[in-house]
Image 1: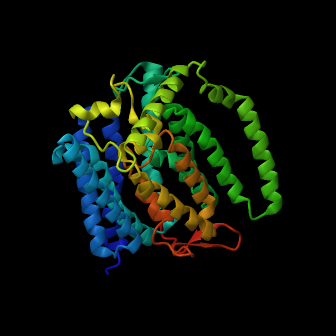
Image 2: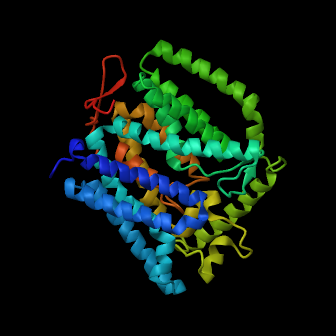
Image 3: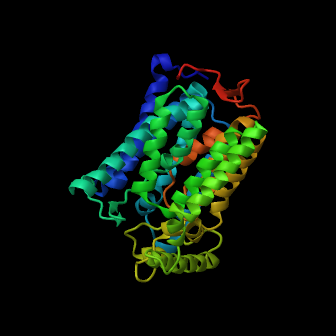
Amino acid sequence: MVRINEKTGNGKWLLRCIYMIFILMFLSNVYQVFDTPLKLISLILTIICFVGACLHNRISSGELLYLFCIALFLFVEFIQGLLRYGQSLSGFFSAAYYYLFVLLLPVFTLLIRQYGRDGLLSKLEGICITISLFMVASSLLRFLFGIDVTGITRMRSGFIRINAPFLVQLMSMISLYLCFVDRGRVTHKIGFVTCTLAVVFVYQSRLVDLLLVFCLALVILNRYRRNSASFYLVGMGLVIFLVFLLFGPLNSLVTSFSVNSEYGGNTVTRVYETDYYTTLFRDNILNGVGLIAYDSPYHSIISGSLGSYYIDDVGIIGALAAIGLWVIILFLIPILILGKNIILNPSYQMLGWPLLLFIIGTSFTTFIVFPYFDPAWPLFLAVFGFNRSKQDTNTSLSTNGHFKTKDESWR
């Protein structure tokens, strides 16, 4: 196989395509009028990247197996939609095309071999900073001057709510990790601050905010776990700090989940949605009710008789209702594989455990593989996943316990 060479530009064009995919997917969510063309361009870029990766690198058996499972899943769901609802291929494609982003898995693997694990994450940090700055600036322009640059009407606490891409949510932890392993770069501090501000003050998801606090604390704890004295001192300090938050600033956030709070109506709705989608899953355990196009007359099965339920509100429960036990293959088995790899590789643990905890925790509200198969999922699989050996081929532990890439050209 031909090794990708950054000097010839081969590595750079793949990376630029990845940049474009994340930017276009974010813009398609913000500007709904351009939703379809932007996503189609993203899919075309994904296919181009996949072909390029296949030409330059051999796909591992684990990656091939996961790609095959996704293909089999889509075939089964298409046949079910055709026989059960008479859904056409184009209708099915409009409901299922997100799963083509799984083709990015070998692309990210190839980029990791070129730049190193931390090197690739550092490069993706720039995209997250750009998106976060846009989110924060849009929110402040609307709040301070009444200037609307997004057309988004959803509000909370006087600020517009813009959905933060999953990579931006993860980047708060990744940037904090990079601050520890590459202390000389100011970019990591900027990434940590901007991404955290975007998630907390613009995305405004209460569960995500709670998880983010604990996962950031876990990154710090993992940083000092090799030094027992520092570990216990930092641990005690974090416990005191978290107790202060829970009985102080975070207290109102925790109590907001109560049905008697300001957002009690949302909590009640989630209860009804959970009950409805649990019933759907019990009645359609194997393949779920299927991937049904939004404009299909059968979409009321997904949205309820009054059209007031949103399947993505309840995360993995909604996924079970729609795709049944395929959730085990698409998400649960990979999560177990990732957990095993993180346990076996000490160099994974400082960042791996917080990210894994965050993805599992958010699966009850924002499921990373349904209804939108997020491009951050194949990135996570590539960084910690299917074709990794017990010793990370891209990172090594330095003598002081920090992580250091073998190829330092990215710094």
